[in-house]
Length: 353
Image (tube, helix red, strand yellow):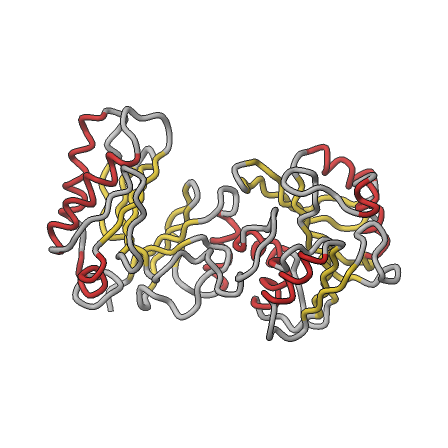
């Protein structure tokens, strides 16, 4: 069997976390880490049985060439990238034509650095050639139209070194979780939640607490990761609790209860792990006791965290981390990530001895 060349895309800053998950799942040999992506070689099928939960999307690499540079006149040359693509390895039988025949194909593009062209120029140059080769319709996004459901999805990435053409291995992006039927403002991107649960090092029997659980994304990702832990979420917003309970329906070991993150209904030292995206005031402000001072959140975290426990928290700026340190928590791992367009810090903390 020919080795499949796969590309997992992720949130900026999670590349190393994603690579570690790929290796732990034994999906293949990691061959390259780049901006927002991990490339790996798999001896199995293009659609692996297990998929990395910290990935936004997963693609099969079909062709690559040197980056075309910044000049608009070079965009037409990307048709050659599409002409060189190996269509026999696309996820559907018949070189991708089975799925593309009904709805056609779509192409999305991204590039690093300033260019004299836009993403639509790249998409159209590649999409029109792919459509010609496959004998199907190409649906451009140039004028704001949305491609119809069922399209075979292709992606072009220009990273300053390479131009890569790839095709999605599944019917939809990995970040679109089936469980997330209900949402609220400020809800966390699922692959980021999965990364937080992963960094927490959750083990069997651990009590894992999310003091501001929102729609339940972090604890649901922790439950789906497999450890037989006890997962308990609290929130002062009844709408958030309704969303969390609906999203987690049928998952064992996950409970959601009303609670003020400034005074949790838990004894001191009860939580083995705390994993949370607190309401720092960006999309969502603090409720209850947190409405007066978010520093109470850190004091309460220290109170309920067990000796030897650890917390994984998303903080918006270094000032938040400094507050954690003042309350007796030491950072032992940190990743700068881009969430909802803003830079934040994913930090793992342990109580100071």
